[in-house]
Amino acid sequence: MARPVAIVTGAAHGIGRACAARLASDGYVVVSTDIDDAVHAQAVEGRIETHELDAADIAAGRSLVDDVARRLGGVDALVNNAGYTERRSIEQLETAEWRRMLDVHVRGPLFLIQAVARDLIRRGASGAIVNMTSIRAIVAEPGQLHYCAAKGALHALAPALAPELGRHNVRINNVAPGLVATRMTASVRADPESLSLRLPRLPMGRYAEPSEVAACVAHLLSDEARAISGQTLAADGGYLAG
Image (cartoon, rainbow, N blue to C red; front, side, top):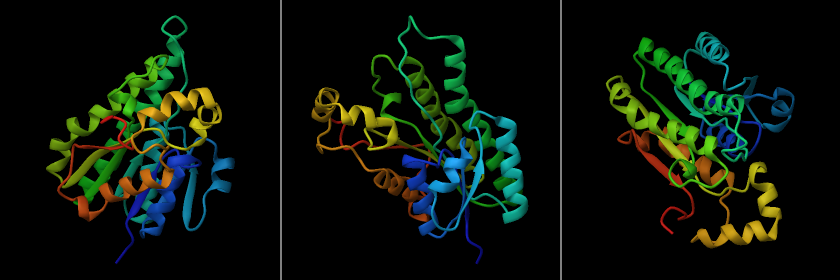
């Protein structure tokens, strides 16, 4: 039996890298993408294909799906993980920064979903998609207006698309990480004052590891979750419940 094929975006570091490694160990042929392919190629381990891709580039995303489908027979799973954050007050926010945030987190992922869905429907194959949202789609933090708005829009795609894709036996869900020990949070974790403000919000008392978030993604992509679609799994250590 042919191994299933998964595309993981933003996979050079952190959660994306952990997702690519986990899915490879679960038996997927992993097509791993990142905007910085030089760093990316050095970061991954094992039998993982690497490609340079700006998640905001819709044409490049469609081309990648077409290429993978032609060479490997199709795309069975997609993890829309690529993303970034930055802090801007409402007084500081510029239109270019607003557009870039939405392009990376919403427009690019949406049309990558469309390309993968078209491939699955054409083949009459079942498949699964996971969008990496954030607790910031649900509970905002000051100074992250455009990030929270973009993650909120990404968050809405799963329940909006689940009924339509479900008719084709394609599932779509979200994983919403909380505070995770990645490069993105390194400066906060290195600052005792900033850390002291965040740790009390975590009932488990620690930042999650990227591999723990990847385990949630792997579950939602697996047949064990074949009855789950349009849902959000918060990998947040109890943050939202606290």
